[in-house]
Length: 85
Image 1 (tube, rainbow, N blue to C red):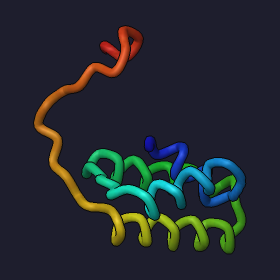
Image 2: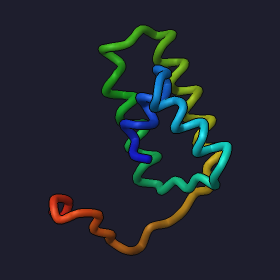
Image 3: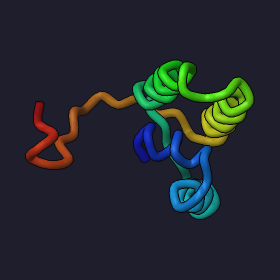
């Protein structure tokens, strides 16, 4: 899951269902790059959300960081022709 899906999960709906299902049914791995992106997205939302919303999202990110298995990526993976940049 990319950082935007994880952030969207904090607001409920289908992203939350997918996120919860992933945590329940699979082992979730998290790279340092995604962890940093999550924290960066949170910082970018500070002007758009209330303090309570930001606190809620921050708590969910911290839960993910605790539940996910950290991994180190040493190989560049091309997922599609459009992502070769």
